[in-house]
Length: 150
Figure (cartoon, rainbow, N blue to C red):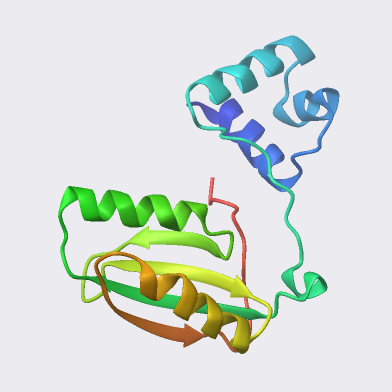
């Protein structure tokens, strides 16, 4: 990856809706070479897709919870089952396998504390091999970005 690739990535990260002409101009290339570089970055898995970012408050999703999960067993089957279920729950926006005292850290978004309690009772506590869940509620979002420091 060279400086031009990084320019392309920075421009796309700042505005994924850039036209091909504007992207090429920002990268200092003509249209076709820029398009080829974007395709190579996609094929290499550097660019995985485009997302639209919504304001959760505008959608009445006002409660952000960080749930630390401990599992009974840390064998391959248990971990794969947990990860598969976590991927299927729309309330779980992020799931990280962790080192330290908890095995996984979840970022959960719900409408209210009551909705989280239902989610906890009906979903999280029913996952196989979960021994404990420590939930922490965010008071305020100070920074939230998916932009990488390119």
